[in-house]
Length: 65
Image (cartoon, rainbow, N blue to C red; front, side, top):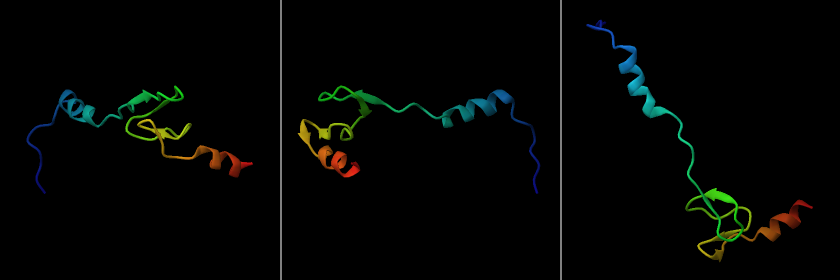
């Protein structure tokens, strides 16, 4: 097996690893109900996406009872 010529410094190691850090998810405010949701996804609270209802949330609420 080969052996490295020189060690990488802690600075070089950490500079490389900082790109793998977990970044916070981007959220936007739902224009219909005002809650924070992930962008480009239907709102799980009111069921609207781009001004149209795509998920019927009333069915989910009645099934739970």
